[in-house]
Image (cartoon, rainbow, N blue to C red; front, top):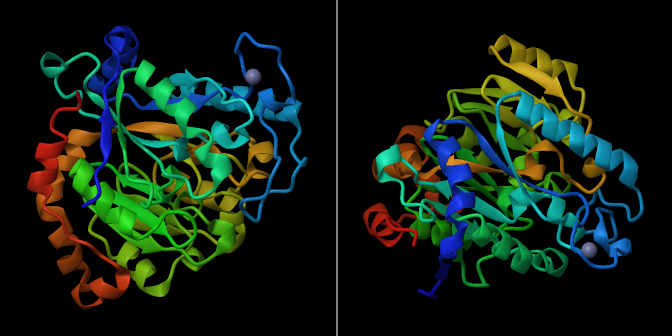
Length: 362
Ligand SMILES: [Zn+2]
């Protein structure tokens, strides 16, 4: 197997990391966001703020976003997250890497903080750095690695042949991770990720280029409610998803709602934040006991991302790992899809070995 590398945070990062640790202990949602413009002490140029300058997904039209509106929308979105009770940690904008505002794509963030007494400052947060398909997005990663290390994350990097983008990862709290493939991430990355973090990773094949990342077609709330668009998935992957024991209920959204980024939402407790006003979906969420909130994010949607793409949530690694051993075989057996595992590209691993390899982050 090709090797991966892990980098530990510098000792001086412990004060910053406690910001993330303490919120994880309290089971509060913690989100990493990016600034929309650069605050570096250099002469600012056109490269120092969010804009659409290339086309790497069908939503993007260069020059189509309004910076002033984007600023206001981002500010309002951040305030909604905080009002809902989330901890928000901001990373600097990466100059000339405009898509760096979509922080979820940069890395999968995991915390193993556990009970307060077991916290090792600077060693309880892990960032699995993405390997983006497109060069314009790979340009973000050096800056992101540095920023995550400075905030107390240990960083794991996959070998370059394993393409993996955070937008293709949808975490089911306490169970495992669904990984989209077909446009950006490669199928083989599911196994590569699984063995490195000791968490079950189930690949799902995507087929609609407008719903190119899994998080544009699927969201799973903490109670196992999936908000999903059937059209985005290959038939067998859709079947695997809706019959997964990780999922308690499916709210199916129309293609129109999905193209308005209805699946690309953020949950903070009972609050669900949507970047578009979608009355049908909001009604369904209300019926499930949630409070839907609308934070307009049109300027970011023009770049192909909405609420979920703008935040990287710090997930509970312990809860995911402790379920890994039995869940994979359980998922396949319970779904009755054992005969389809090859066509679905399911891969197996040894969660025990994986737990050993990442039991200490630093
Ligand atoms: Zn700059």
